Length: 180
Image (cartoon, rainbow, N blue to C red; front, side, top):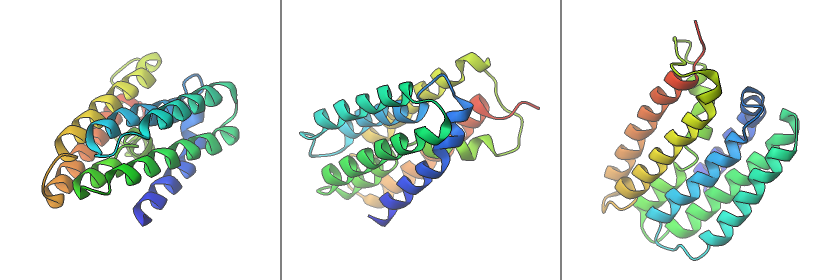
């Protein structure tokens, strides 16, 4: 659960800056709502996910109505906590699914790092950055959930998650990185 606490702390720290960059998009909570789909394909216990999806959708609506980066961080933190809890709760019977589930915040964790890489990026028009990031999040969570989350060996699942997070970092940097 230490990993889950670290994930929530990273999301909480990055949420204000991410909210400022994507002022017209509820990027953090929407990406975490997409993560619920990834949880559905990888964890063994899924009965609680319907309620998790409803709460995550409500958090997206809350983020859309609050303005200012200071007001967004509690909402994004709540969504991250919800996703981490749902993944931990449903992923316990199979450790590979737990590894995959903890990576589900994906874009929310990677975006602040990828933007700061300092290399030339942003290969899409600014208006399409947030939708492109959400599309990348969807591909990431479904791939990791299906491929890593269903492995027999935890070490193989971890290797797949690390490789996928690396690929996601490069993709996010190309889409959302700084312009030179």
